Image (tube, rainbow, N blue to C red; front, side, top):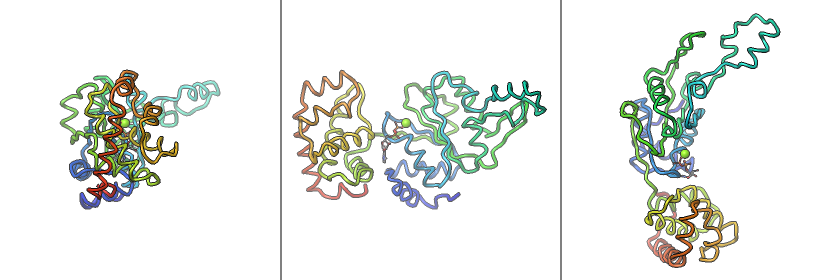
Length: 299
Ligand SMILES: Nc1ncnc2c1ncn2[C@@H]1O[C@H](COP(=O)(O)OP(=O)(O)O)[C@@H](O)[C@H]1O
Ligand SMILES: [Mg+2]
């Protein structure tokens, strides 16, 4: 399982996955690998938290094992369960295999991660799970071993690289944070967002990417109910491109605004007030960017 020799090399490996990171994020990802610590990343939806774990797995050429958290998630969803239908069949057929043995064990993501040396374990949106589950997870992260009474102790030969994400709908516990390295991911600045759009959507015009990113950057200052993330920026660029527009214009912006904004109040607010001004301003910013040069290259 290839590790990373330096922060630079790590960053290059991510760039090849078309995941662009700044110095701070690259450093903390590097350190988490070296110190073998779980990495906790928080940030608004759409800033690239989930994608970070995916890119890490690809960059390390390691399997990605994902545990999506939700309200009410428990050990049976996260760790293991028993295959009741098959146990029942075996009972009926009068078979001899013990019912609570590995044969009838269903491995959920956390157990799966113990079985794959060097895997990347993504624990996604932990803020959605409840306290009890977080406490259990803390225990799991402390020793990467699990006791299944009927089977015994299962231990990781080599602990997985763990990435935990949170949209910060609630605070995670101090104890969990203490176990992790921490990074807050902000929305990218204009130059980085342009670079991301150019990397992810190589077929679209530079001017369109510049304009859309400038527009979205302005929107993020408006204190909307829900600010668009990078994913939505990319969708909006693609929407224009698909409709054959290589520049943004107010009429098309109006018709496609639902690609970018997903709340009725936000849509009404932007449509009702200032859409044209925002489009004009985005055009001006794009021209400035072009004159400054270099914003289309690697950030
Ligand atoms: N730094 C980045 N480099 C490249 N693409 C990014 C980056 N950040 C976000 N994206 C894009 O934005 C999309 C949404 O990111 P995602 O990881 O799902 O956000 P989050 O998990 O924080 O809500 C991704 O699919 C990816 O295409
Ligand atoms: Mg996510």
